[in-house]
Length: 243
Image 1 (tube, rainbow, N blue to C red):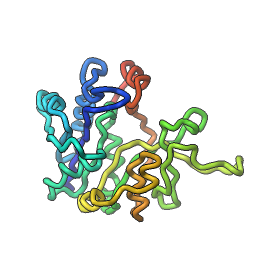
Image 2 (image 1 turned 30 degrees about the horizontal axis):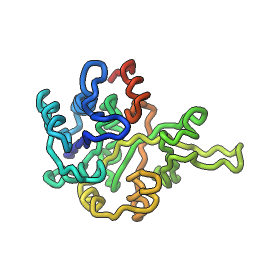
Image 3 (image 1 turned 30 degrees about the vertical axis):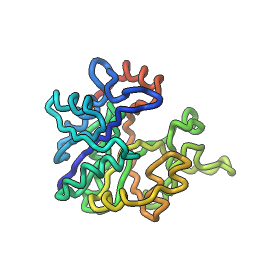
Image 4 (image 1 turned 90 degrees about the horizontal axis):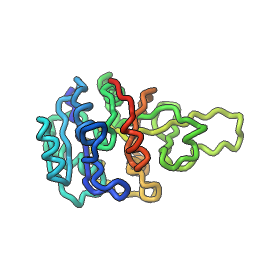
């Protein structure tokens, strides 16, 4: 099976200017993400998709691959699709966000496990059990609830679900923004119009659900530190990373 990992990385960031190039423990954030993904032996190729020549230069200077994409592409998935369309021989395409510097190869393997087992879901993503005490009310923590077959019912920044009956256990998971697509579905997905829930929550994966497609959620106990805020960037300087 041929699996392409594309890392979308945009130089503009409102909360953390020039985020991909910010140093974490001595090297740029995007370099961390690329090098950790490249350690995953099941990947056929790893490519950074970016609107910045500086990011291209950063990746090529370490012997990596990077492609310039149109700066007006609206989402990471569109940037991934813009690169993946040139690789129709791929079976699966992974969208690994550039602000996941501490991604582990084992997490990527979990993400694509259904495909490696011979299944053909349209797309998969990762989640781990939500810390209900710390993250249930945190809009920065995206929650996902599942149906009985392991597919996403809904993703939200709001507390999910609402416990009208407090003693009833209803598993809630903390979503990790890592996706895998069948190549053909990714080409279809990029043509779908943005949807109301997607725009209201600012969660592009809701586009697939609103258009009637299913997302398989692969569960893990591994955690990473996604960098979206100044506080998370400061935490990254002391983050203990181990493969």
